[in-house]
Image (cartoon, rainbow, N blue to C red):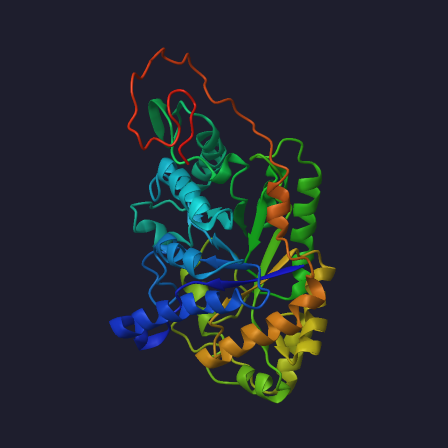
Length: 407
């Protein structure tokens, strides 16, 4: 089982309306990824959301990713998620941004896709029927792998059109495979579909761990039946999110869990995300969130897998539950409610150096191994290639007309 962090531009309370706080939050989130890169964490996921005040101010994650590509060495960075509705992000722009990030990261970019967080967000782009984006995702996700391979791509579809042949650039890094493809999943049907398409499943967990087993099983059954993956290879991966407080000092970790305000983030999930089911009786923002009232309630939540909390060895035991239900990648949202900045840095080091090696001794990312099996699916050209002869190139052309290389 592999591990990662999830960053969303979370900025609760009055700070969401303070430009200085907004700037500081963005700097902190970038620093968390840089710190995670030092301590065995394999993945960092950055959300893309629009107009979701407090919940997420990360509207253009690819800008942050460009900085992180230069500031990190090993960690893979992914979109969690890129909305591929043509009314939000045109499919050609999606294809271009993904392969550009593939080059900038030199193969360390992961492409998570989806339909947006809910009706409030997508209404920003004049999408008033939240169900209409499902058909768009199904159409677009099948076209982008074609854009990455074909040099004369054209398409006449339901939600977008490329009217005559175009070469969508750049092509993927080193011409070998393409970034791993993922999709945000909620209900069992989406898990099954993700498996059948041979792409990874991104799941946001807000319930007891064993409730997830049915959805993971649905995914694994789907991928077992996958005979023709969507991309050039299968990405057999289920990623689950949760919260963690792991410190060398067990008492301090538990005290953090008992601080006021825990549950505020989930109250915002309930407010904005009307495309996923919510737990009954959970407060919706701006109602006062449920909090962990005492040690016995904390133990109950840990036992049920609602969060991981304690010193490294007991947190490792808690993480085993995710492995038991079939989770391939366990990801923790940062900053979790009640954790302060210095405590997050401490947690990244402690968990990364003492817990992760117990589960993931392999230095190679699973998605890197999958990408190494890539096989092309489409031919370069679908139409006759014009007979054009270029008579001369500039002297700095990397390959001259006679085949001589200048690099």
